Image 1 (cartoon, one colour):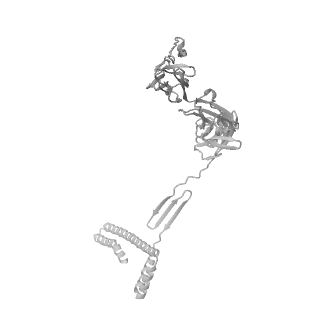
Image 2 (cartoon, helix red, strand yellow):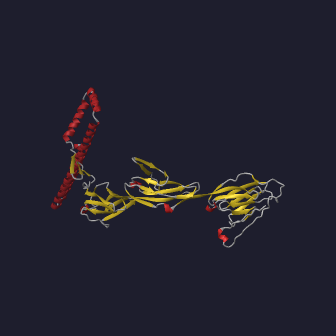
Image 3 (cartoon, one colour):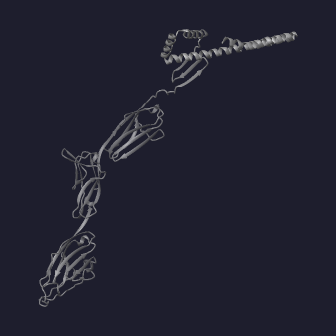
Length: 484
């Protein structure tokens, strides 16, 4: 019988230098010992699905191997990988592991995409027996840059199509979301839907407006991590729109004024301020210009320093791009403040008999004078007489007077007490004035008498004159005491 022959195919890169033909001459069935049963496979070989870079293992289980041999081949091109326990391929990532001549394991380390395919386990029996197991290599997703757009620009109201292609094993799924976290607007005929995520490729956007402009993320994922994404930018062209929140700004002179306007446009517009004469306002010591840009929106500020009458009037905010131009205006008006208010000031002057109060107000000055009139001596004596009459009355009159006094109001009692104190004070002042006048007159008389006595040379007359003068000097207090 013709012997069986195995031919070893060497990797293509080594075939240029070495062509190894490994022939295994198997003994024909007539020469093989027939002491035992013929080898058989215990179980079907299971396929292996392994992620890229990991290790793939195929298991071939055989019983009654005896003197027969087990070999591994790649089914696609019949390349021999191993013969029994010996590895014959130059691929160092392949190894053979045998357990009790029953479990023959083919191990492929650091799995690559090229390792994907089916592998054959053979037994060199008279009629060759074989099993086939396949290795599937899971490949994480990857974006196909050549088939994916990076950005797209359309005019407002037109349709936009965002395309994104990915590869991997299994075939990746595409999910869309906005980078800024806003919802994706999907319009189908008259229906408008807002979605956080949209699955499928491509992403169709109908009748886009400026609010849909921004960055979209194409996310590719399968069972093999990590997922990958690519940013696709959607630009929407439209002419500028200028909005002014306050069209009239009022402020007093010599203050700082800030004007504001908002501009929306794409492509980015040229923005500037001008006066009512059409002259562009330039930055300087008088004017300070600011711009704050967020996406397609720009907020413009015009700061006017130290407002004066020449600064009053209309200011225009203008924006221009390739799609058109727009403007809006703000009018600056003067506020006239009221006169400065002076805090009230009060001054009070008090004399023995007259009190004068002066109050200063912001625009009017008032002079208020209050005089206190002292009671005359006649009034005083009359008051004493009335009091005496009450004392001389009967007990019934006295009780009636007490009851009347008991019902007098507190204000009347206070008024009487004040009048009494004022009368006493006036009497003291009057007595003091009379006493001083009499004393001065006595002193003058004493001096006159002494001078006359010395001039006549009569000491007796001088002594008599002095006694008279002394009596006049002492008499005023006695007179006043008598009057009281």
